Amino acid sequence: MSNYDHSWALRTVAKKDQAHVEHMLTKLDKYAKSGGKEGLGDFLTALVLGDLLEAVAHADDVNGKYLQQYAQYIYSRLPGTHVNLGRGVFQAIRRVRAAASVPISREMVDRAAAIFEAQLHHAAQELRQPEQVKAGG
Image (cartoon, rainbow, N blue to C red; front, top):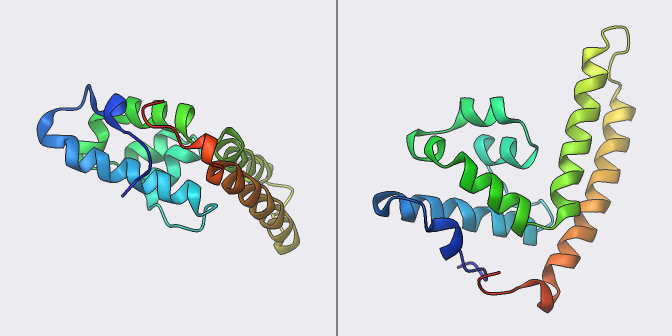
């Protein structure tokens, strides 16, 4: 069970979809608390990384209807450093991949992964602080 109150995020979700959306929000909470070690799946990973096209491509019928709610939850509830770190790594790798003359080396990926892991650990510590866990906001 999540330590967070999801009621504000569920207020615009159809009653028949609430259990599904609540489950997804709880997965996001667990992901953040684990420092990124808890798996998310393709849809939520794409959302956390800010890749809308990938998120839409992996959304099921329910998740596709609530992209805005998920985005608002990620933006306002997950530690900012945690979310923005993933985007930075994702965008850096995308830029390198786009520059066809510069192949991505194993060393580059390993270095980015080490930095990302350290920053996720820091973000998870922030999230675990009692003052960070607030019911309803």
